[in-house]
Length: 289
Image (cartoon, rainbow, N blue to C red):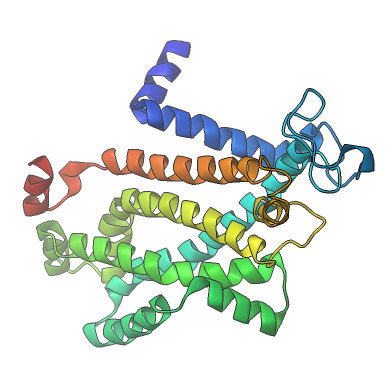
């Protein structure tokens, strides 16, 4: 049994980078689920006698400008950061991937009109839109997630639609249409499942962008508000005290870099594992070369 599981894991994670990424993402998920229970100190407790201390035995990552334990704040800040990023990805997938597949059912004119709206959304800068939405509807994690997720949707729609259209013009789909199969049946039977590998790659890449987006917005003061910790919010405080504490920006920066790199490494692993046999002939030959 153990041998079977190890073989499956080796097949799913064929490279060292994929295994390291899986371990890092698993650690991030554990901190997201159980982080507040794993902290050695209260992340909000201030200690005037231990202000801006460097890494040591009692505080492995040191303390901040208010004497709070940095490790405890990083662990606690994992949950709001990751949940906000997941919310952005979820909104993007629901608002982009599903309509992207469904757009195959539309005629050329309807699809053209819809795509022009998608192109207009792609021109909007993420940070500016998030700030504008926060100014209109109020500052909070839900507002930031909704604004950024809505801008992720057009990118996912474009990618998934292109993949779905590639399968929609294959010979077996044309044969199904000649035999009287409806477009909805063809999408459910022949197109939906085959777009899942591409959707998985795009979702993993989008997750990395979402982590950068939520930490960047928190750095600007959008989303979860102090004193509650987030990775981006901690960067804001450490940058202000950089001349006194050179270690400060390192720890949240490492957490952000490790998570984003893991998402990209996972996307690369999923891309390599895409089934080539399902790709139309000319593209299949190009991939073999």
